[in-house]
Image 1 (cartoon, rainbow over the protein chains, first blue to last red):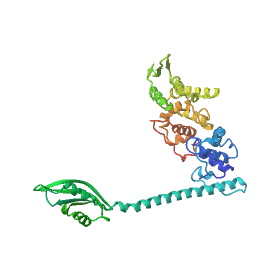
Image 2: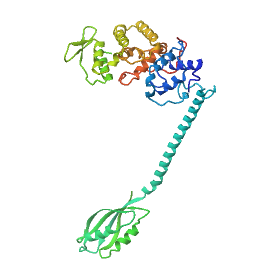
Image 3: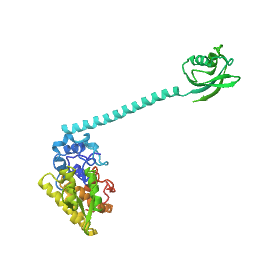
Image 4: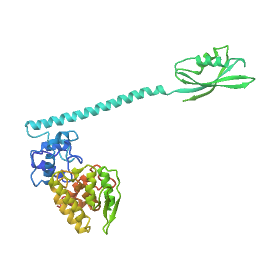
Length: 225
Length: 174
């Protein structure tokens, strides 16, 4: 990109051709892009380069509002037709050209550094998400049948005992009483466990430990979540 | 484009939400607007100027005396030359004149966007839509100006967007 050397007739010719079908360097409103190119041109283009001259006079009329125009001023090489070789870096040794070289250099570095930083941020986020994921998997929903000794057993107390069993990775759910005959009811209680941490045998052990109330325990249903 | 349709397009581009009712008068269907507290307004450019003032955008009619005169000149041009004549030859002459006029200007008045640009855009749209690629390149300045205006926020609305190819194919036909 770029227009070549805008102080030379060839550069101005490129600018003229570029502006033949455009009102501004970039887009449809005056912007910092126009300011950047305006400042690179040493004076009004000759009358035979009518498009460049038109553009020049137009941007000149924005002299006072230059700083307020939208956009960010970039190095000259960022503007212009895509197939023109950028010659702002090479050439004369006076300080203006040196500035251009610096502009070009730091701009480029800045951009790739930003891009790099963003990329690394995204990678880090992705990694952390990935690391968390396995912990979410491997849960099961278990439906337990807890049977009492007889119909005299206090079912409320029984439920209380069962719910008192606490373990890491164990969450008690809803429960209900299901009649099995002869006035006896069994407790059906739901729980969600993390497979790595809680197993059904551990649950059975702890529940049947309440010998006063619990006669036996069965797993009615076992579903992976 | 019918005058009433054009005027409602103009209303929207000016940011007016009113939706006036326009009636038509005479053989050539000249639009008429009945105002609340005054006489009725007749004529496309008259009503357009009135709408601009209603929308508080008087700068669209020009800021200096010369600019105002140029806006009026182009509004008159639009109604007499563009709407009046639509034969192929007339359009060609019109575009040729407009092309040489726009050589050193960004907008019709020079460097400021005005009502003249809006109405001429609406008026010429139906002709530009039918131009061939070669013709669009021949009238390069008109194409540049037209492309610029159609990208101006709020102007184009539902009108079709005319495509202007960036890389010129016929650079020798000047």
